[in-house]
Length: 431
Image 1 (tube, helix red, strand yellow):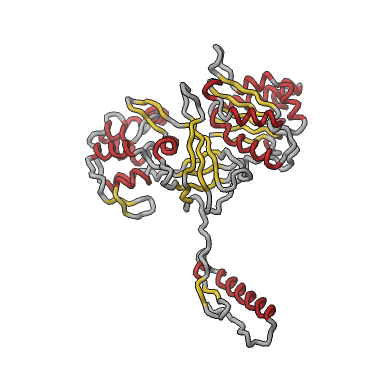
Image 2: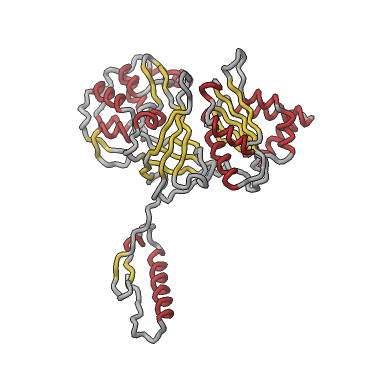
């Protein structure tokens, strides 16, 4: 595209020439953008001081779910102590040079790799060399070993895959018509189990990957504030390992981050915004945070942010885990916030430190009068953790507290809670 340029002989002052040259360039840029894609300006020439056209500097890449940023792993350390029944890690990624930004309450999407041992076991079972060419999810051809390692789900079995394998399976055909029975069968099973239980199902490599789902990113609640860590993002990762059907099973992304991701090897990541889980706009607003296990992640970020901004609103945290001695996540940081007055109250529930199990909802009920008083003063309530049990039990406890301390009927208590949700004073980040 031609961009007019005023030579020094033009009848204008240097300031006028500079202004007009800039105006012409912006006008050309605007014309080029109309009806073009986002990449159109990347190679647009611009005029130097001597009037010569030179390539414009490339626009910085835009990283998102489809175009993740290759982030370097800076640190991973174990949070749970020796003898704990859990393995929970604190993981830090560098975002330097990415242009990515996040807010407390957001999540980080991580693209993992599958366990190489599982991939090799699959290749051996199928009788593949691993070099057979197959299409990736985007249609690009690559060896099946790489495809299974980086591009396809091995733990979730698609309906088309199950239907294709059914004729070679002893009793899978009957399960396909019984949804509940099928779900029971699939629990804890992966592609290797299916292949071993259907010994004559040995499809062509390209056909096999066509029956698999693309490897999906895993989302982790961010446990840091960008005001404290502007070039990094912190995660709290519970590592999943368990035995089922005679084999050790490993969480795809959690064990990738804990065991296999190398510090020198970048990991594809992106920021997943979560506008439904945000600190109140007014920094004087009290907040009540309720989290169990890795559900503490966003609340660590909240507390970092409230301290960094000097927010004056009181902060109350309910935190639950199994054992105080080994599972008190971020204990030193939480106690430091208590001492500095950033954390106003801390109520913990360590379920296995006594004969009768105690959870966060029980601590809430013990503090029912004070908790209701905070609600009446405008506090916002945040819940993070397991959706099936923890979040459901916490909501039941909230309804009991509203009904009991507010002298309300069950119907009125539900209306009170519904209003908290409507006014964004009750927000949940559950999984």
